[in-house]
Image (cartoon, rainbow, N blue to C red; front, side, top):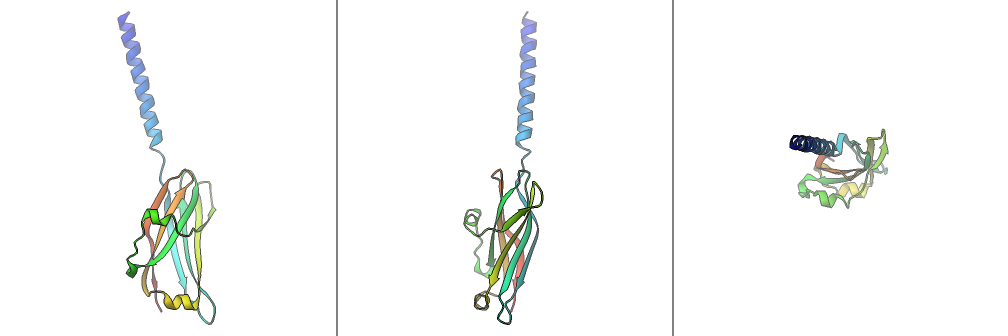
Length: 149
């Protein structure tokens, strides 16, 4: 009789152990969002026409993409935004290309007056991607571009 109890107990422990290991494996399969294929394009205003700054990226997460926050800043400013600060900046417009991927575009018009006040040289684009499951990924320097005269 004690052999059956011992065998049942050992079998129960093995089953519980397998369930726990499986649960841990399933819990760790979630991924953070990714941001890829970043590109930035700056067009200076000319002839009375506004210029533009456009940043495009592909965001991906297994739960889907909720949004992408974008900030352009001059390297010389040493701004270096944090993940927490990125929550309060402007959002890109994201359109789903699949259940897990979105193409996100951030675009700004730049007037002649604004362009004249911009610092020349290297600029960075920082991003904060948020997935539908709440996961986030912060890229302090997702893209770099030169702003010249």
